[in-house]
Length: 376
Image 1 (cartoon, rainbow, N blue to C red):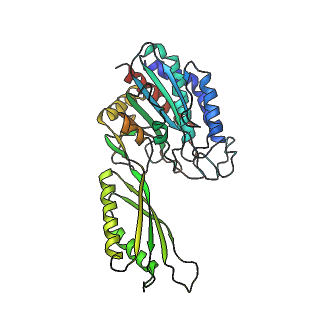
Image 2 (image 1 turned 30 degrees about the horizontal axis):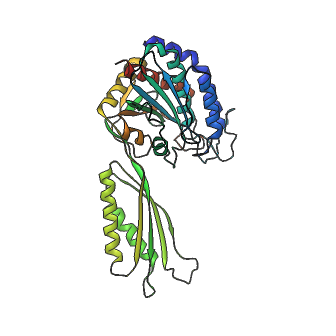
Image 3 (image 1 turned 120 degrees about the vertical axis):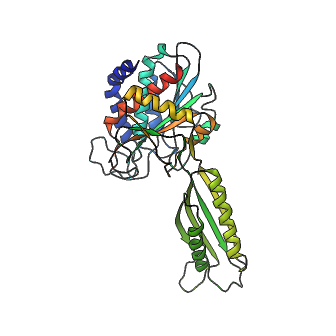
């Protein structure tokens, strides 16, 4: 089966690269991926699979039916772009002003299309179904939650879910994951301070105390970045209202709850004696992505079987960034892996470009993982 998967991947590689280049030209922001979805849907309609009606406006979902009823594995790729002006001098550069694929979602989508093409040719070699799911709105919108709630994975419900994300800084061509938390939980806070008329101090000074104390008390494994402070409009007038916002991240729900409670206690202590009123919005947009032991084990086995010994690289510690694939992992067992890009430009960089040489690696891994899971 290994040689069959490798041979089929080679057959569809040129088309897969062409898909990647076309997607790279037409990046669209979260929830607005209409052209992207139309293109992917037409590509899938040319394959022997069942393209389903979208649950949201811009998702693309299809089922590959095996030789007989059986389990389901769901493979997901994110499809949205970023509000970044591309600087790559490539013939397939973005034609959308101020938008580009700077987080490899064009590569993820192409690899999933390639894996679907391979699996369609192998549909007499496995039981059950493979769901091919192109998900909108991963960046900043976390639309995986909306997609799941809209019923995109209800029939059949997945027995296993899998996703692959290209990752600079991970050894080139390696598949990397771990048991436990692989990607952190992420969100934001918004704090409003409102002073009484008799308040003799200044809110900016008070906010400075909050910032200084919060840095001291924040969990060591947590992320805290202040993104906005706004108060007042004139130099000779003290404002009675202040807004403070920040980006937050954690590796567990428990740590997030502890940080929130600590911030509330800090605000009560600092503001309590001054009469300053405070309101806090503390929102976790992305939960932590947690991989079960079985998911990590199956990923390692598939990587070494189909890509060769040494192709799997154990992830030493969780990544502090976020991915809404975490919502899928909360509903089903599965795995989230990094695909190493070595010393490439960083993600979200105007000169980032997915490496086409990794397309075959990704599609072989996804197809092989699917075959092995369904044929257990």
